[in-house]
Amino acid sequence: MKKPSTPCMLLLALLVSFNVYSLPQLSSLPAATATIFLNFNGENVNNSLWQGGTPFTCAPAGMTDAQITEIFNRVSEDYRPFNINITTDSTVFLAAPLNTRIMVIITSTSAWFPGVGGVSYVGSFTWGDDTPCFVFCDRLGPNSTKYVGECCSHESGHTVGLSHQSTYDGSCNLTATYNVGTGSGQVAWAPIMGNSYYRNMSGWNNGPTPYGCTAVQDNLSIITSQNGFTYRQDDYSDDISSNPTAINLSPVPVNGIISTSTDLDAFKFTIAVNSNFRIDVNPYSIGANNSGADLDVKVKLYNAAKVLINNYDPTDKMNVSIDTILNAGDYYMVIQGAGNTNTSDYGSLGSYTITGLQGTLPIHQVSLSGKSEKNKHMLNWNIISDEAIQSITVESSLTGNNFSTVTHLNGAANSYGYTPYQHNDVYYRLKVTSVLNQTVYSNTIVLKDVDKTASLFTVSTFVRNQLTVTATAGYHYQLNDVNGNIIAKGEGKQGFNQVNMDRQPSGMYILQLINNNQKQTERIIKQ
Image (cartoon, rainbow, N blue to C red):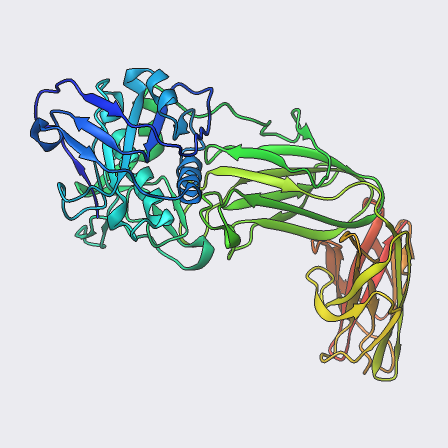
């Protein structure tokens, strides 16, 4: 386990000799003066606080360039919110001020300090005498990039003033000196200053230490107030009403950083025509399933009137994918860090990228139509494209929001017959992919439950100001926009009824009508 030491004698001069190896020379924030040096090269150590002042030699880590790069990336992401440079370059370390730098020696020389994965002195970052800390890679896996990366952040965390994070029971009895975290999957969380080896999401924490259940340690406040550096400068406006950053929806990513739990990044973008809309906001990670990510992303989408359309915050993953239908116009998006079932938003910090699509695609038009015929839904479509179509995916939904795959077809298909397995109205759309691997979605249609024989309601599906419903019996209704937000709901009577849509923007809406015997869903187009 990782364990801090406490300085107990007068500091003497540290004499070091730097060995030169051809290893990746990496820096996370070269403009910052505060520096954490990840030393994989091996080191001759002569320091009064280690080995009683007896000089000793630490062997190189013996890790590959790919392993070193991954460890560097993991540690850099942990320290991303702060104005500090993580580096593997000794010349950068030597150029940094003495009282705002620390060397982390990653080595297989571990016999001299048994029983731990690493060791350091609390607060040594500002001592000004280059007292190093150590990570023993031969005991971590061995050479597990996950374990070594977590240990590097942990031991350097001690040097910037942090103690361990612990857990207690309801009676204030210590249950674990090292908080092991909680959860499974990519949102499983543990504090960096606990034991974060076995959870994907690790972060800085505001929690109790081994010194008592009320001895709460605010990691972020300590890091940014006691070491000569603070947070990075905020990169984007926090407010959609005050200079939000205009972006294009492009395969070229927009990069950002959430540096505090109150940091919001506000953006504005424009949709040229009514269309299906796809955008991805991904936290920085070193592999699939958001491996090594620290930021659990939350996204809020607003319309041109700055009214919230939807809040995207999935519970089982750290990234956000928005897949919906938007009308032409201006939109706003706010990105922030989120808490989840395993942790609060306190330490949900780090970097992210935004990617989308724009520009003229070789697929110019995909028009989908269909009808209910006996016990089947018959779909037909027409595709206008400059390039050959590689594949067509038929997708369905019972709500009009979350679609799943019905079948995959080759690019020559132009129709499909489908018998729904549920007795509901069904929404359909096509996902069409060209041989250039560019994807376009069709319009969305809704087909009635094939088992229904008669309708209780007659609805005006194209409206300007008033939506009209003629009913053969009393009913309840709910009107939603295409993103699932409730616009209106209530009760209607037998006969002629109206729902006021005068203040709603143009676009598509979904009306659900329900009585004891039947449910009817209609697509409404506001002109």
